[in-house]
Amino acid sequence: MVTTARPRTKKPNYHWMLHAGLIAGAVLMLYPLLWMIGSSFKPEGQIFSDLNPIPQSLDFSNYIKGWTLGTGVSFTTFYLNSFMICAGAIVGNLFSCSLAAYAFARINFKFKPVLFALMLGTLMLPFHVIVVPQYIIFNTLGWTNSFLPLIVPKFFAVDAFFIFLMVQFIRGIPVELEQAAMVDGCNRGQTFLLIILPLLTPALVTTTIFTFIWTYNDFFGQLLYLNNERKYTVALGLRQFLDASGQSSWGAMFAMTTLSLLPVFVIFLFFQKRLVDGIATTGLKG
Amino acid sequence: MTPSPTPTSTDALPPPKTSLAKARPRGRNILSENAWGFLFLAPWIIGMVFFMAGPTLVSFYLSFTSFNLLEPPEWIAAKNYVRLFTQDGRYLSALRVTFTYVALAVPLNLAFALALAMVLNAKIKGLGIYRATYYIPSLLGGSVAIAILWRQVFGFDGIVSQALAVFGIQGSSWVSSPSQALWTLIILHVWQFGSPMIIFLAGLKQIPVELYEAASVDGAGPWRKFWMITVPMLTPVIFFNLILQIINSFQAFTPAFIVSGGSGGPLDSTLFYTLYLYLQGFANFRMGYASAMAWVLLVIIGVLTALAFLSSRYWVHYDDSAK
Image (cartoon, rainbow over all chains, first blue to last red; front, side, top):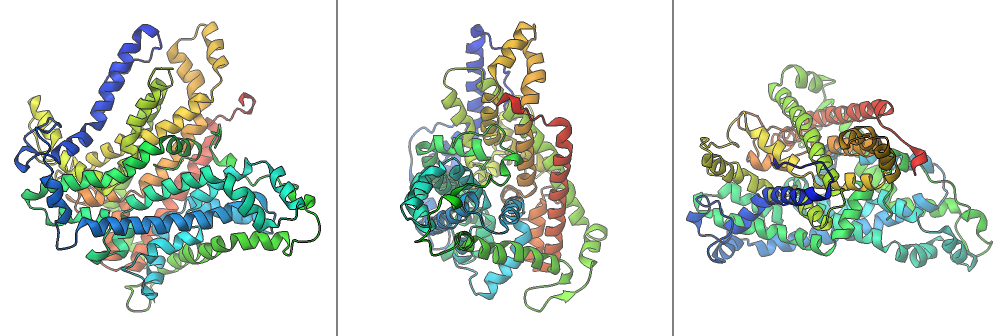
């Protein structure tokens, strides 16, 4: 762990020490990741005998080997499956959470305080409490071993975090805009589509990013519902390395774990500010 | 998204009623305000009934039954609960492991997060780069890939053993040692201090500079300023982070599953609560038993959250005048 000295003083002449400490800490923190990336380019024999993360040459054979390792189904399938589930979950969350958020933020309907409290209550509900009955429902419907259990609930606003995020955002939009639209004869549906939804874009982007990361990184749900290799996602595909791995597939394994982190990392590069804002304002776990 | 100064439960109060309804002219609007509300809320209500509240109640019922998915549930009253606490040694060790994990990982994680946030808040150059770098483990840490990496890092030939060997310490496999395996998971959690750090940073920015200036005039040193200004002003954010972390870390699953190869071993030393629940419910198909475990988990999280909220009035400082 980070054990470097971090001086607390703010005197300018100590700033170089601060930077030195911060850089040392960062290197220490990222070292396991760098080692993994480096190992994915090393020949099998060098991986555990070499602490230097920088490989002597760029050798992509681990990637080629890892991509098709397993029993016939390649990572092409796993990535397609992961991205399909993510796409479904994103569409579902955008649709259902924006609708619910608009109702909670702007419309005065009966039992609103009770329902709002209920919504917030579900934020703290452990997934494991509902997982058994949900499994029974999906099993009865014959949906196990399909993507439906991982996608369909999203169309019914089960991720209260995003409702909360959007409610907060909509409350910040001046209500006069809607009033003007309503004076012009718009009804609630039109105001939502024409006024709120366009202005809500930043929150929708945040929702998209976090839904992608959470769904992509999810393991429990996928482990539960997907048991045919053709339906496996990236996470489940990676797990196969642990089941099967003889000593000989470590390079391939590191190649595939490295690759699997790439989508989330690319999103991080492009949407860093959004991610940071999302965490800072709502505590969404990245 | 403007950063809210106190992202806590106070934000969660229903909004003041808008005057929109009154401003609406007559005509065109076919539906009443009420009807529109429920129309917009329809997906959420269906989801609430079928995927949240309904399953919660069903799970409560199932916790009093013996149920294996094939035959109908058989009512056995409180036997599941009795068995959990009196006859199931593995359950008790799962409880012990999970509490140890939460009790060590959460405070350590928050301490690192706060320390780094303090340093990064000191108007240093390159804040964005440092913040991004320290956040990366948090971003990727929950994935299967990182858990697999961790297994190797702390494995027999892993880089930790090798690094220790440089200093003459005999290397061993941390992940297969019953006394050390849990520590690898604690370290994995502490490693991900990036997101609470970002929340702390946002909180630190809200503290008025005048307070520090006034303290300096009065001759307070950095240490004193930290304890007398930073910590009290930051308590709402600390509180918020604490609640989030407790809820999340009690439900940790992936790292334990991957690092132990799905068994919770060695010798149940990484048998996290949710992992044992998964094994009972979905490997042994004891779904009534798993439901009982889930409800005990709900109660534990509920009680801890309630305790945090109740205690908060004594240590969380809400200063409205500072806004």
